[in-house]
Length: 383
Ligand code: F3S
Image (cartoon, rainbow, N blue to C red):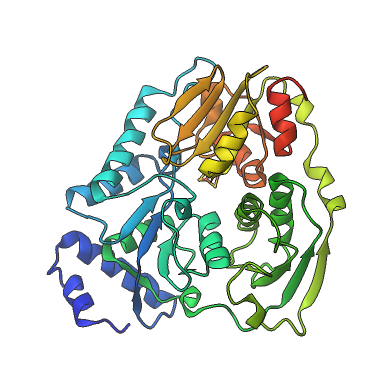
């Protein structure tokens, strides 16, 4: 791989051991993927920091780096950590709490600016900016909505890229593809949750390639966010070209692409059986809500009839708090990567198609999907 003189000095350890380690791994990974050089980035976003996911090995890795003096050299944000809140009076295990907070402190010491999976609300990249973002939902948002350029980085690599201020020059950094193999037409979703289900379905259409999607041009931002978060579940793509949204979409050649239609009749099977969840934890905020969405949601909940409602947001709000009995706004936390079964949660009703997919596996609970307004009516006992 071609390295600048500055990068060679970094590799030789002239700027410290931590930076040398970071750049060494980036070069190795880049070479194995056929990248010819590194590229400077303006913003790194790190994922995979829930103690439930990375355990003691991850904790040690992050703490060792911080002790070595590793510091982020560019603006760096980090995914949310496990949701450290009580559920129906039951608290997370003290050991887990302590270890999760050690991970957060090490990342803060390295210079992380925020804990959220919607880093574009903290700092919005401009079109053409080079980034090193992990968290698939944010990667697709950066590339497909903002016109920025980021590989779909693994969590560790994004952390090292934040230290080095660089990543390998992957395909994502070279702009949109000239043509696509699939064009997916969507019927209009009526709610962010439905947009998410469309994402799950559309993400399966082009398993190895990049698709162009029609029908998203006039959708409100939360719909697009849910669509992309769910799209990334089955699809490994770093971008999906959204007609009317993605900067430069009209230059992509769609002649010869296979056409696929996804209609509302395909959504039905996802909205089933929620009534069998008798004592639910309601969850909104996967991905994290914007402040505007938070206000809208909170204004509709004056009480909780049964169970609890958790709303997850970035640490744009200063702290986690219980707004009303059973309504918890969780700042910087992710319920999906928390072992909710260890808190006594049996089942979750969510409006997020991404959460629906991952909750059983990562949180150890049954999950049901409900449209946002319907869910909020149910929370207050009017559903
Ligand atoms: Fe964010 Fe956790 Fe969902 S990181 S996208 S709230 S799974």
